[in-house]
Image 1: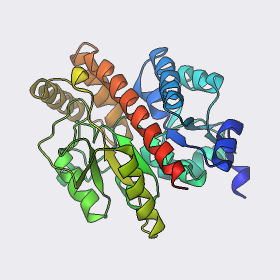
Image 2: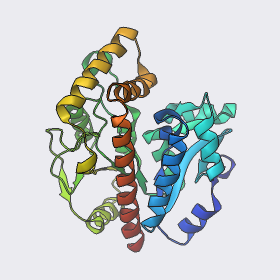
Image 3: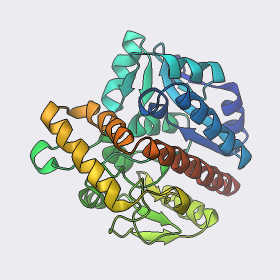
Image 4: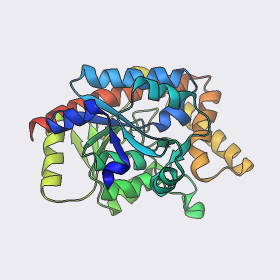
Length: 305
């Protein structure tokens, strides 16, 4: 039944069958995260970084009502140029498939589809989380619930700094999701390596990280792991400056009544505008850095069988 909806690229299928390392990549960054052609260039560069580090990339999306695991360059180009692509989270998947639409997968949706294909490592920019002001709005990303129940490790540069990082960490703790700092004791905040909040555990090698993942899932402990990998120091932004920009963007979003799935693209776009494009450059570099680490962890995990 699953084959009717799930289309796995032959290269990815072969790698999975032979036990080789595969890294899942999301597609929201292509359709909602960057302008064309930068989005396509970045997606192809990320795939190459995964390859350079010994793994096979599997960019995930929904095209014409089919779950796609591993896109061709032509499909990435199509997504990058298309308008009206649905930003797809868990709730959207059945309807996008039923209506034969195109969907760009968020962290939650990418985790679901990666898990269906038996891919255990996923590299992205930043995870969603508890939005600032959530005490009134209850705006909490579906990414967090997915991390609590789906067996995929997510390599990210922490939670997006437009969020309430403290509450995001509290939510993950409540749901038993380990938050691991790769080479750091502090939760990174996307554009910066410092948030003022600690992580649950620090890990310094891909091998140690893979060992912990294998033990977790061998014990039948459901759910993912957040592997927080700080943005490289040379690309990080000044924390005070970026927080001022984010506060301004949030205020504008409130004034305009922007909510729900539209809030994150609006805020990221506004931050890019207010930083004269510097935030986009940082975003690209942190994604590259996460793709590299994701591949290294996937390689170590594949060696453990």
